[in-house]
Length: 119
Image 1 (tube, rainbow, N blue to C red):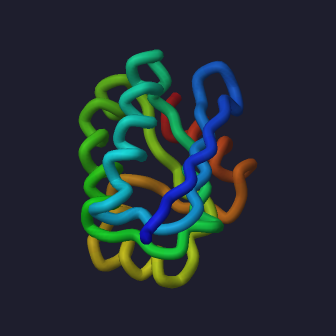
Image 2: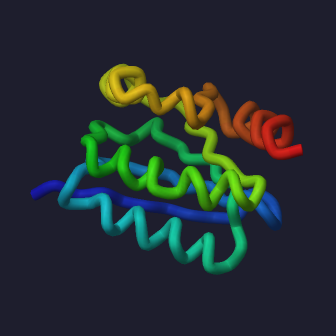
Image 3: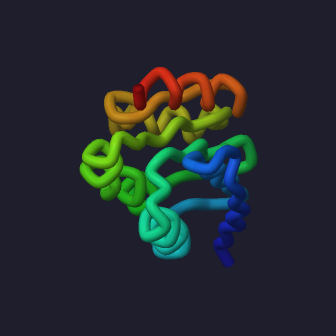
């Protein structure tokens, strides 16, 4: 059975940390989609997404992040990814996700990137 664990917390009043562990694919994407919808309903539009423990991501998982591009941009928000493994990074490159969102090596760098991107 495929599983995805999601842990969330607020890093600042307007930035949420979303840590993913497991597999993000067509079986688990709805779970992540609901998490993002809940944050957006609370007017949180800036996200650090820690991928250090995400094993794989499929097209449905990428679709979750792509589906929020307009909403985030409209509200001066963004997503910055942290530490994707080589499989996840390859998928990001294949689907050109880095054209929309940044990738960093630490949460601290991600926060700096968010501040720079959303000024």
